[in-house]
Length: 75
Ligand code: SF4
Image (cartoon, rainbow, N blue to C red; front, side, top):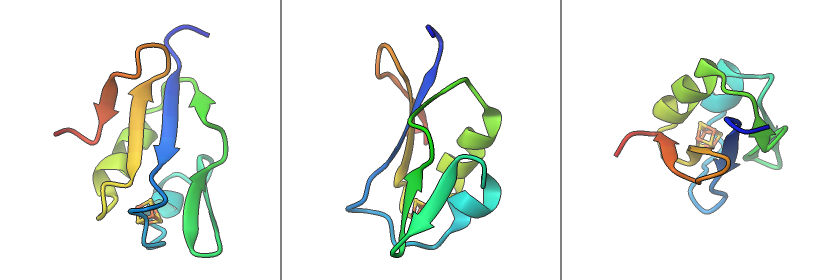
């Protein structure tokens, strides 16, 4: 669907702190100490912005699915 967001976890940055899954358990799960999005393409959900802004490694990237324009974290 147009307007969707894309959720990505940069596995090279994630340290498995679990904050993203704590904030948004419906969007993230930890496996072997690394977070991954449960679904990569999702309807916009503000909790994803909180998760991206709260990750200490800035490993959670939220973008517009079609344009790939980055939404969070903010530069
Ligand atoms: S908050 Fe960041 S570092 Fe922690 S598990 Fe999530 S993606 Fe990894």
